[in-house]
Image 1 (spheres, helix red, strand yellow):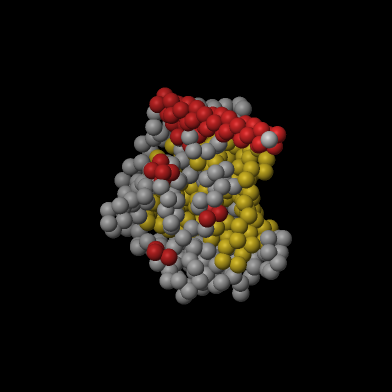
Image 2 (spheres, helix red, strand yellow; image 1 turned 90 degrees about the vertical axis):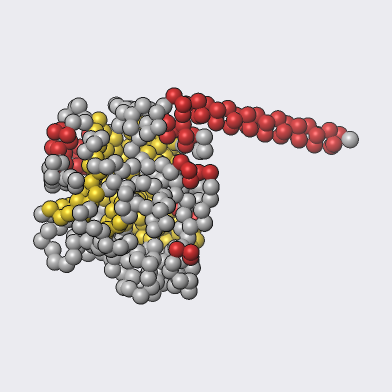
Length: 412
């Protein structure tokens, strides 16, 4: 009888705890819903409220200004978005609100200003196709560790957070890769951004910047080599397009060979892709699907975009290794798997059936192939900076960093 009373008491306490937890979650969701109504769509506060209903997101803040960055452990350690001007300021990342209430067997496109993927996507060592399958959309599946599974927080404070994930993936060649991933995201102060970019700017310009330090470790007992296949780290930045947004990609001019691969999804039309001296301009209005890639001998460690209609200058900065081996991401097992691009840019647009995931546009960087022995690790750094202000002031930054005037960096 005494045991029954104890068990009943435990069950009662458990029931109360669950009820309290449920009420707390409901209360948080209610607060988040109310907060969404107080902020305009497109603002950072609106996006924070939306995300807070679905995850205990981590908001990193610059103690000396209004810059903020939001990171999600539940949604694969994504940097979902950022702002240079507090909760009521512009939200820079693209978030696919409709994707959160459904599941997709191929890719759950939640969006995110900076998400981590693994490559190669295609090729004889692909991580997105099962062995012996035909490389077509019906068989294409994003690895769950970077698509649906939550990550664990290792450490966190007001300025940075470190997260990690362990996974096993069998590549197209049938090799099982035991992988440990880690990702540190740190918001940067103005002086840090000035040091990275090597310049300063007018106090009238508002800015936000962050660095992601991405690591992959061979957790298995066999080396990753050209026989087994090797993965790579892949940083993808998704942003909201405007009618006058142009992606700006500096490249090495005095190098032989093609400047870019421009036919990933069919050849990009000439009115959307223009080469000016040592800079490529790629229209990013979200109205025509196209992707390009820059080979390692041509790539520079920097790319960006400018929206002339909203006066937002975005700059990405990343690690490059011109003499290293980069992986082919194309959906074919018949090409050399160890000859690929070091950075990519993508403009979304309608598919043949008229449907569209976005619109959004992307700036991407990848690491070299991770040819690692057991317990060895490879690191890839990727930075994102946003600047808002008058075009005259932003132009100074663009010319020094991207090598082109903003008046020239336009495609009508």
